[in-house]
Length: 148
Image: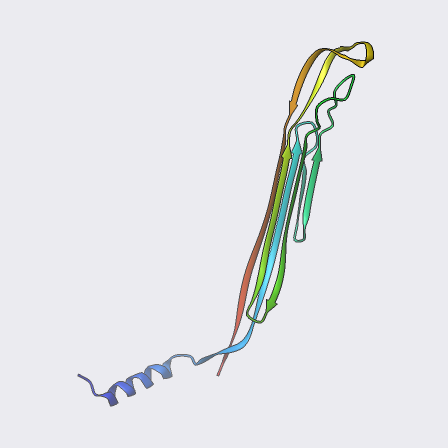
């Protein structure tokens, strides 16, 4: 067994070979966000949006029933965003928000419009809607070190 004096000398020798770093009090927190949305209906153009701030899209159907109003239009919408709060020297609160709504529609076509705009020979049609919303935040901390 080695003596305590030998162990101390060995530890001192090893410590002198290692770089001597002291953790600085300074560090920073950074964050980047990407938000994307998509909304589409079967009878309209798809809508997309992306960015670092809040984004939203909306698509509405255009198909209407013949003769008299009937059914409902398809609709889709999406929102996405990232917000930061309670940022301090050692942390931050990150809130990710994403929502999506989609509702298909229904309309009808007619063989012809009869008296009082009544639909004669009815043919029903369903429409679809789709939406997506997404929020992503990539956070990082940089710790500053300095040689003592």
